[in-house]
Amino acid sequence: MALIGKEVAPFSAKAFQKGEFIDVTEANFKGQWSVVCFYPADFTFVCPTELEDLQNQYAALKELGVEVYSVSTDTHFTHKAWHDTSETIGKIEYIMIGDPSHVISRNFDVLNEEDGLAERGTFIIDPDGVIQTVEINAGGIGRDASTLVNKIKAAQYVRNNPGEVCPAKWQEGGATLKPSLDLVGKI
Image (tube, rainbow, N blue to C red; front, side, top):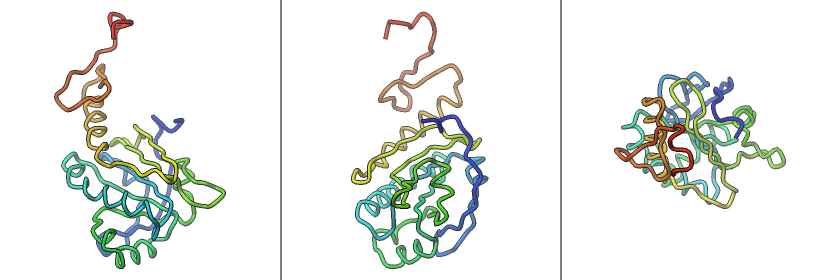
């Protein structure tokens, strides 16, 4: 949780997207909202279900001005091979970052040093490159990407409406709160 409110640390990496290898740095996370989804490894079991689920939300996230990045400690070459051989992964349009040096996984504090793999971590980053949400799951627990849409909407609302906060289960257009002395003990 020490990462909340912190700017993403510098890194440089190779990634795979739509049949191309590209370079990605922390600068890519500035000027737009970003979702960064770490997962343990390509060619595994829970990971492809999560990445496909994230792809299913990609259009809705793009409509909100969000770019999506998946990250594992595999190389960008491995991402391409997985993309080319798996029907599920072949659908992915978002950026798949390779982190064989473990720099990014360490920067986001999701590296399991013992096995050299990333934990299942999801981060929402604001247009200033500052981490706004963190979710980390144990290896056997897959994530639900549909929750990202509402989290992004809430984060965008709070950013655009200083002094207001979004309560639990907040939906776009729903009531917000304005923290003040008058609210103490009344919620």
